[in-house]
Amino acid sequence: MLSRYALPEMVALWTEQQRQEHWCRAEAALAQAQSEEGIIPESAAVAIAKHARADEELQQRSAQLEQQTRHDVVAFLRALEERIERDDKDAARFLHFGVTSSDILDSAFAMQLLQATHRLQQALKELLEALRAKALEHKHTPCLGRSHGMAAEPTTFGLKLLGFYAEGARTAQRLERARSEIAHVSFSGTVGQHAFVSPEVERRTAALLSERHGASWGGLALACEPCATQVIPRDRHAMLFATFAVTASFLERFTIEIRHLQRSEVAEVREAFGKRQTGSSAMPHKQNPVLSENITGLARLLRMPLQAALENIALWHERDISHSSVERVIAPDTCITLDFALRRTTSIVEGLQVFPQRMQENLDATRGIVFSQGLLIALVQKGLSRKKAYAIVQRASLQATEKGSHLFAALQDDAEANALLNEQETAKLADLTPYTRHVDALFERVLA
Image (cartoon, rainbow, N blue to C red; front, side):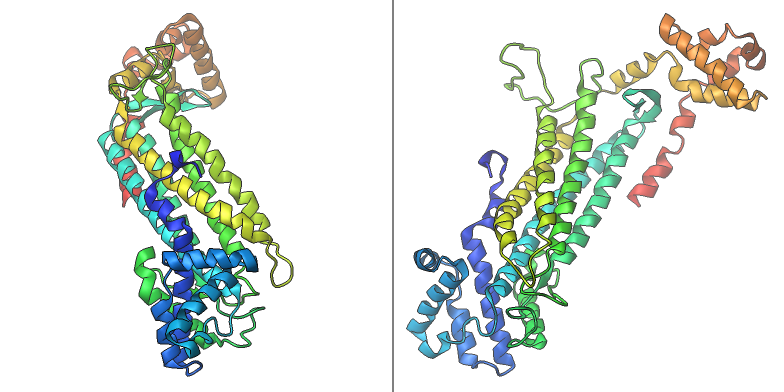
C-alpha cells in the first residue's frame, strides 16, 4: 500500500509484529483452556503465556527458521518453543497441542480484522456526525433538485445531505453485521472434526481471547465456527469485502455529488481550498475538487478485491492454500485504503463551502420550469384530463426553454389554461412551500 493513502494507526494493525502477536495470543489462550480441562499441566500453560510475546527476538528467529522450513507458522512455533525450553523444557512440548496451523492463522486473522473494522466503524461514525451537522445546518436551504443532470424540482440542500446520511447509517449497520460474521475462531484440528481438541476447549479458548483482548476490537465476543473444515469458510470474509465495496460506493456517490455541484456553471458548493494551494500549473484561477476525485479513484481500488474474496470461497476439499496469498494482500490494503477514504470524506464534509445565494440563482435561472408538475396538477384539479394538461404544460415548458421566457409567461399563449387559472393562482405555484413542507418530518424520520 502506498504511504500516500495510509494512516499510521491502521497500518500499525497490519505489521508482521502484530500478526505474530495475535498468534501468540491464540497459543496462550489455547494452552490456558487445555490446562483448565486437565489436558496439559497448568505449569505448561503458565510458561507458554509467559513467553508468547511477539518481540524483536521472536520475529528475527522466526525469520531465520522460515528460510529452512518455508512455513511461517512452523518457524514461529519452533522459535517460540526454543524460548520456552530455556525456561521450562517440559512445558515446550505442550505448545500448539492438538491443533493445526490454520487454527492459529484463521483465529488470529479474525482478531486482526475485528481490530481493523472497529477503527473503520469509528471513522464511519465521525463521517456520519459531520454529515448530520451539515444537513441540519442547511435543512431549509433551497436548492435545485436534478434528474439525469437536468433541472427537476426544488428541494433543500439539507435534504440532499440527509439522504447521504441515511445511506451511511445503513452502511454502518452492514459493517456491524459483517463484523459479527467475521468474529469466529476455530480450534478444531486438521480437518475440523475435533479429533484432539474438544469443542469445549475451543469454546473456552474463544472466551479467553474475548475476555483478554476484546476491548481492542470494541468488545464483540468471539464465537466458534459451528462447522469448520481445516479453515473457517471464506463466505464470511467475502461478505466483509462486499461490505467494504458497498461502503466505497457510498463514499463515491457522495463525492460525485460534490464534484458536480462544484462545476463552474453550477458553483453551489466548493471543497475547502488552502491559501497556498494551487489547482493548475498553467491556470492560476483553478480550484479543483481533487479530494472528491481522489475518493472516486480509491473507490475503484476498494471494489476490486471483492472478486478475489469471492473466488477464495471455493477451496479444495477441507482446505487448500490458494486463499492465503490473496488475503495477505487484500486484507491490509483494503482496510488501510478504506480507513483513509472515510477520513478524507469526513474532511470534505467538514470543510465544505456552501453558497445558498448561488443555489437560489440556479433555481431562478430555470425560469419556472421546475414548477411544471405543480402547474400540471393545478390544471387537472380544474377539470382537465391529465393527458391534455400534460400537453399544455409541456408545450409551455419547451417554449420557455427555447425562447428564454418564464414558464408562466409562456402559458399565457394557451387560452384554455388562462381560462382555468388566473394570474394570482399561477403566481402561487412558484411558492416553495409544497416542496419543503415535509423537510422537518423527513429529518425526524431519519435522525430518530
